[in-house]
Length: 413
Image (cartoon, helix red, strand yellow):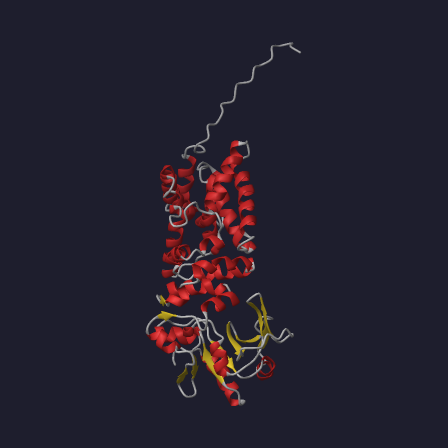
């Protein structure tokens, strides 16, 4: 009980006090049983969204596909959902709508048992009543948690077709929680992977965050490749996804390490790594045609992000981070004078520097340059100024010597 949010317990107590059934549900119960500290606490109840709002002045109703309430306590939000029923295909505003096998609206309310059966995986359908300290299990989810088994509720093909994002969720839970996927749940994934084609890019971006930003990025990537899901998210990005570029592999491993150390991670850095080879190749072609390197990276980067957004949308603030990381790469070659000092003090310097270190895995000739920037950060500002003043001119660029001007002869016109 000590790991359960006090605010979630308050919500349940008030709902039960008003005569409604109310339980903790889903991932928080699963995590507690697996020995993982839950991050979020959800509540399922027999109260309708309007009844929830009447009970809590701090509640806000959200969602169209799934109508539910957010009850806010400062920075913590307790999500409260009404028990869902199986529905009858009603296409009314509050009904259940299935289009070509895909569930597009699900606002049919039902019983506690029906709610459990309409959830995706058995381990996510457990409910807990804090008043009686009992687990309510309608789908044998408790046994699956004990066996560390991941199993879809109902017919897997039907459930994947209802919501293809479940294909990604299956991989995420398997890797994150170290579960074994039940054969019938795993079997259809490869064949049904193309169903992700119809998922909005913004929703896929949200799933990308859950897949790669929770401390298991590299094993998640490997699982996505094995299950033929990676090409649905990033089509044609790597020649052989099973053997990604070393920069990408190490970016994923670095993301996991930073997460384990409690350091911040950003999707912008990861997307910069994913798209780098496409951007770099296109930029080099533009440079060959006479475009300045930074301008070439700007044009190639914008092109790559626009193309990727057709599959997975990237929020502007993260695409901006990726672009800044790319644009700084040519500037690392300019080690001399005030430009180098300005670069060190720019907001994205550290991320761009970390990216330069990753590039060394594939471009060993950058090792000396990367070491120089490592060393210059570790000295005091006065010595920094001396170091950059003594640095070589721009690496890889031969500066033309100006021809001396000829003086005109006296009286010449």
